Length: 155
Image (tube, rainbow, N blue to C red; front, side, top):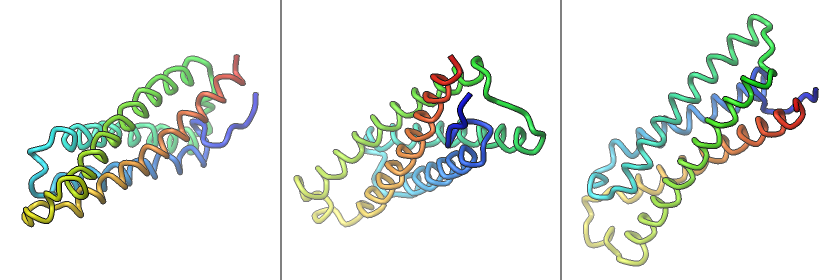
């Protein structure tokens, strides 16, 4: 069995999960307090996906902390397959919601000039939330890839 960086039950895996938690929570909070975001469903889809990703990553970080503290090996095929499936689902959901929200933010800012004509909209917060969601996606994609490589080494 190989030692895969970012796999479940390792310090690098814990670092990825904590980074996912922080970025997802920051993205969700930024979008929650943005004025005018209730009119655009892409922003709410992103906020909901970041909230779900926060809870998933928090749970996985807690499992990693417990396994590191108690010296439990999480590198068995059943556990890795379960983590892999949920990581890939979370990665696809977060990528779709982030891409849709980025498209709406670009449309409002550059194409439609809606942010200049409506100063009550929080366009800066929209962009910040999309950037944080993109960072969250990059961390979950790295974690999903590490789980994939670990599963390949276990088979």
